[in-house]
Length: 392
Image (cartoon, rainbow, N blue to C red):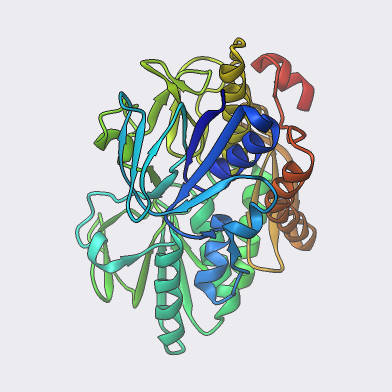
């Protein structure tokens, strides 16, 4: 009997899950991929899109060729776990034996006055395009404020400053610049931003966002023609809306088998899921975690179809990659538990390595399409301690 498997979301996790499932299952499963857009969004390049570059648009149909994955374009309106059905706008009702929830994440707002009305973001392709058009319209000397100095904020501030040197770019960090980096990594980031003319304000918390100014919590006002919110991501709200169990973060709550314990036909992967258990604690939202999650969810669905024992997801970090414009970058080595190590690669070599990592995401999908089951990741099949020792 052929199992019906539906994958929701065609980001890094969903694409990996759908391709791996379809290519490894053969006649055991029929895989349907549901996505709101017919295009694959390279989210790790949205800061480039906003700054004026034009990344290549990639139709999902092209990335899925010869995989036997059925693509359905439409927004997921409802999940009915007991009936094992999905309601998709413009595509009708889909039944499933197994479901992989990979709907990802979007902009995370904060309780800051005027943020929703006046701040741009790069959390999605549409919002990145809106920021792109606004930046194009700015005159020389206009002020751009990037709120939040995590990896996205760092990358966006550097990209805008390099692509539009006539603009005055300010990066506002709520704590110290370079949190999560080693001392050498912090120096590399500070040097690159200084060379690009980015003004950095540390310990700067925003209290209000206006049309042409920001107000900091200590009362200072900053002129800002364009303000961009880079304060993190939040999980898709659909799991909560459908009454599925969610973690305090709003992510779909999974065990370390990547399965909803109370609904064992539902698996999950990517930014929109949170895992309990000791095998993979504290995963950050990133393509570096999304693709391994997608691959492992696919493998466990195949085990479930075959009636075999499922395996816990295991993962170990290896590095953090930051682009600082097209000519500068930073590769920060980290421990398996994501603690920064002293070793870094920066400058032009760092930029080249970062670009290689970005390109590899698509290469990995292409390889999986031809040689299914070959994609792997640090810590796979190891205990956390063994994974740490393996990559140290």
